[in-house]
Amino acid sequence: MLIGIVGKPNCGKSTFFKAATLAEAEICNYPFTTIEANEGVGFVRTDCAEKFFKVKCNPRQGECIDGQRFVPIKLIDVAGLVPGASEGKGLGNKFLNDLSAADVLIHVIDASGSTNEKGEPVKAGSYDPAEDIKFLETEIDAWYTGILNKNWRRFITKLKAESKPFDKAIADQFSGLKISLGMVKQALKNSDPKKPTEWKEPEIAKFASELRKASKQIIIAANKADIPTAEANLKKLKQQFKNYIIVPCSAESELALKEAAKKGLIKYIPGDKDVKVLQPEKLSEKQTAALKFINKSILEKYKSTGVQACLNTAAFDIMKYIVIFPGGVHKLEDSQGRTLPDAFLMESGSTALDFAFRLHTDFGKGFIRAIDVKTKRTVGKEHKLSNGDVIEIISNK
Image 1 (cartoon, rainbow, N blue to C red):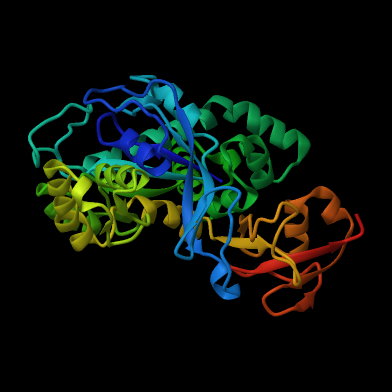
Image 2: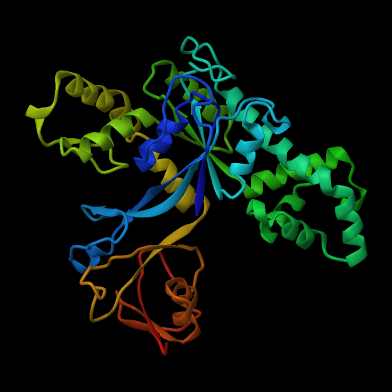
């Protein structure tokens, strides 16, 4: 899956990306720091199968800390968005093209209200962050509408000539935007009841908006939650946007904790509400003060920095993914002796056969049966998998 990190300039978007991936992303206090999209690998957190078998795993990718497995996902941090992006203002066209392949969007906003609509620093609390949520909706809706309007007449003419179902034709036309047939059907249910061939600009715009809601679900990362003005804004945002998942967030705190953990100064599991200092004598006064601030202003108040919560919400709550481990009844190690080295994100409803193909095309083609390693039960190709399953594939290939 691919998660798009979006938002206006200077709201902490690139800091969020760096905190999630520890990739080098330029972070500055001025608009359009991000010109080219940054791509990186983040991780979603889940219980590791090592706890069930009472062994210690050796992940090929990611890591496992105290039984918490971190499974890789792709992230893209796109150029900052400003009002009018759909008309080409700022880096708008580039922004919109970069996010086209994203499955879910994490919209990083400045919840403290200290960044105006242009991405310029202003006095904390002087700007209403609700405007940022509205403008992102507006810009993406306008982008979708523009794509539809540009091709509408030709599209309808072709549709009539080929007698192709409207929903299937739309899904085929816009598959590059990660729009499935199911998403089109969902959007149609909430659109104008007239036949699409009778739609004018208002009906097309309504359909475009519904298509955006179905295909590009958005999580709000309410960043800079450590600034005092953010608390009141968060309450108002949750009341005003009840259909959104809004996560209090401090990307700067997450980045500081991860970098300190990387140096061995603290023990921190991303997503936790607790931090353990390992080498207090090596912490400077400034670092000690920073840890106290993070504990008081973020971890005690919001129970996490919010970064990991956003990633997990995208993968498990919105995309409904499950995590499956390959393994064997008699051997959990791979050919190189690594225990439970792999963990795969699979779509909810995936079967044993789906998993076989995910491991290797030959395994799928030569599928004989699968074994649920935890229960030692043999299952068939139509057996639906559950989160945390460990599956052995028996194949003639």
